[in-house]
Amino acid sequence: MNKGIVLGHKVSKEGLEVDKAKIKAIEKLPPLANMKAVRSFLGHIGFYRRFVKDFWKIARPLSALLEADRTFDFDTQCLNTFKILKNALITAPVLIIPDWTKPF
Image (cartoon, rainbow, N blue to C red; front, side, top):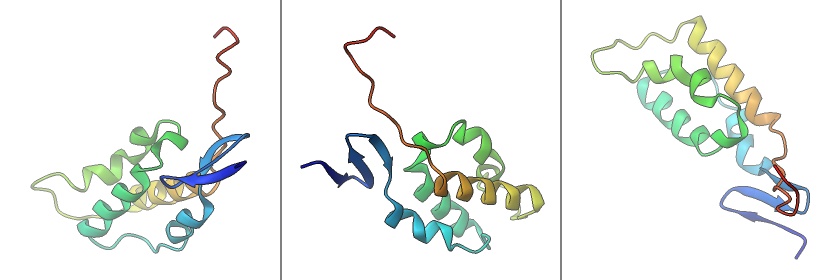
């Protein structure tokens, strides 16, 4: 077998990448309307966090919406964060498995 899908990741001799079929749903998502949608979005994209450099730093404004005693205010900063995360997953790079025979 030359390539396959394992746990939502496309594995091949080139390396590990996001399965494009899985992220099509993310690509079509409208802006988040409530806390349940934010929680669901963060949970779903959190599965792919290894493909996004500084994922939690970027996602911090959305995560802050889930804090206790905070009113839901999906402002422009949250909208920009939402768009950045969606774009990062759509354009995710291929992670290459290290060559253990070479020094690091």
